[in-house]
Image (cartoon, rainbow, N blue to C red; front, side, top):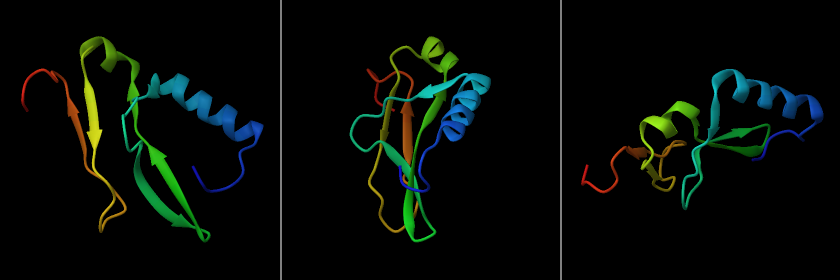
Length: 86
């Protein structure tokens, strides 16, 4: 979110990267962005991507993160067995 305008080439490049890396959206509830950067006067926000095999290895996974505070990163917690306390 943010940054330069999307065009067909950028979308194709992102889709190619996701296909090559076998990545997909991590489906983070709540705050979906985990990193931000001020670039050319606009904030660019990034969300987390997991590899497809994570969903088979950890079908009950849960990803949570906290709000931005003093850093441009938030911490991310991946619980592979969310029914158990970490």
